[in-house]
Length: 292
Ligand code: IPE
Ligand code: IPE
Ligand code: MG
Ligand code: MG
Ligand code: MG
Image (cartoon, rainbow, N blue to C red; front, side, top):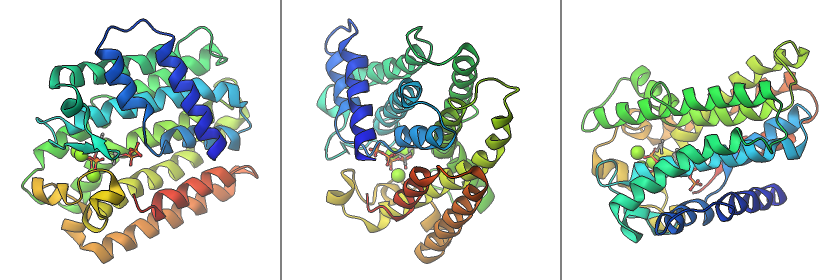
């Protein structure tokens, strides 16, 4: 896991240094992309790809694209008009370290960089893989997925949603990109739409949906239970902002039980995937049992 994290780090560095980007945009993008971060989504790309016997080289650009998309979402999530947070990954957020305009633009640039990486002629993805993954990322990161989820999250501020409505927010704002990481990694191990490995996708989708929801339930729990030092971002931010969260709806104990149930359901679905699912299992465990 450590070696793959390092590998992704080098790929991300390369993606920025090989481009002619004006300052201070370049500095802000490096600041947001290269320092800190658990790299869970990049690792999920590798985990799902390895489960379907994809070559590591083929997974590189996909892992980088998902991480750049994720880092853009964090920059915008922290903006004054959104969660108005000043700390991320143990350091000042991008709009504090630079300024708001630079932060907005760094987010925009990381968003489009994701698609540049996926469609780079130098990737070892075949045309079907590149198109399928690009479509998947565009739709899941966009208005029906992550961006739509962020809209619902803001609309739900200062009110308590029902459980189905809260689940809808979490599935979109966080689950959609996690699902994309897993399905995109898997697609790297499938040659075409008529490949017999296509039957693995619905199984991995089930795994991804349970894990994606579990990820945000745990994020909500940690916002209550962990310290700012542990998190590297402000603890108690959700309550201060009046956010709709699982602990606010169900209480801590029931939220933890839900995360555990989602984890168990995710792990159970991996049984049908074959013998190379160790990394995915480790990542599921890390996501649910993490302390930051
Ligand atoms: C935080 O994601 C944002 C959410 C979707 C909850 P991570 O916890 O993966 O953040 P980093 O990348 O490790 O900083
Ligand atoms: C963030 O959710 C979701 C996205 C960035 C799309 P949160 O607002 O809970 O994430 P943190 O807690 O600030 O990392
Ligand atoms: Mg938010
Ligand atoms: Mg936030
Ligand atoms: Mg949070």
